[in-house]
Image (cartoon, rainbow, N blue to C red; front, side, top):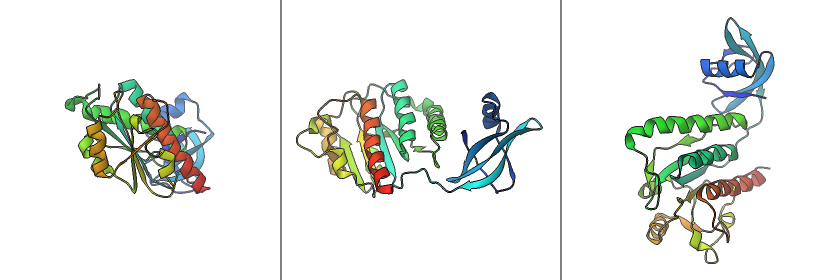
Length: 240
């Protein structure tokens, strides 16, 4: 079943006209007289999609009682990495239920985005998380913050705050030991080259606990996806 995020207003028993982009997608995948899900202000609705007078409309039939969100807010602060890998992180983070994504630069980042290109980049990233959120039937689209510095991470703290550090294995707690599924959480993942000791101390001074993701050294994109998965799995168990 296809899903579209809509601006509304949406009323049961009335028709909602899909915007040009959604209408084009409906035409490409042939949604005429197909049942679809539309979401407005985090509420889901079911209806029949139809082509009428050159437009695609959805006749809204009923509200979807399900809320497909996790029930806690997960913030993923992910250092900038190579573009195709970072976009993979965005897609998977959206699918896993992350609410907020903070791209940031640190000392060992091999990627540094030019300020004049930031707005177009953020728009592309937002399109990626919207498409992923529609595909997995979320009720909300993650928000992507502007590119920050590691010093700015103090502004993105939650009730539980952790920074994954490759040298923490054997001396620190696992991420799964500090995430309880009932409190908001921010998890910080470094770039391909990892964090320096000075950066770890800086984040600890901000209130981030250095945690381990296991005995193996993960690629940056794998670490982000794994960390989001741990948080999501615990939240899902609590939600049930």
